[in-house]
Image (cartoon, rainbow, N blue to C red; front, side, top):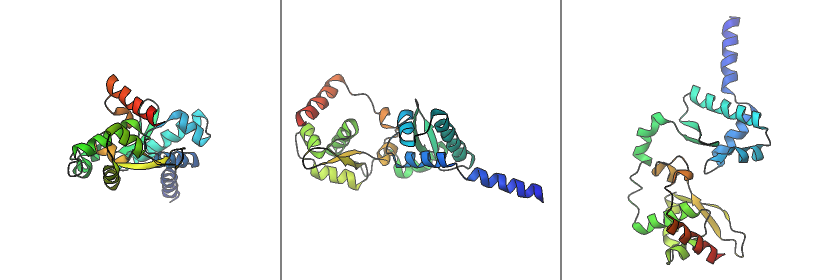
Length: 197
């Protein structure tokens, strides 16, 4: 009888994450992209050993109890991603079909946001050379981009960034996995942003 009670207590204690692990779990859930070790240390006020113990606890917990998401660590950047065994099922809803096919203009705008984020609508307009108001609204409605802050300039325009859906749709683990821009494209993006500032 006592043995069964002890076994039940052990199982229950494994189901409950420590306060450090719960804090780290919540931060990773709220962030849009992978989070560096340095940022996690700063946000949690934990020391390195405590942070890695919390991350290990989260990973073990999610993997042991077969959650739908898992903790990914790539070059000391951490984020939640769908478990690999669910990729086939998720592809039906979030695969590369790209939401009833986005137009060329929408894909162009989406790529500008992805590579330039955080970016304002006016900065997008400057890079494209035309108004992007309707397309930005479409991308927000389809949840490919979202408002991630406000720019500290007069009027405080919205700053846009890509969403978790964007990563899933394009089969990316994080923004860092985007194909590298050519030198010409990179200088074009930088020039347009500097002109705006």
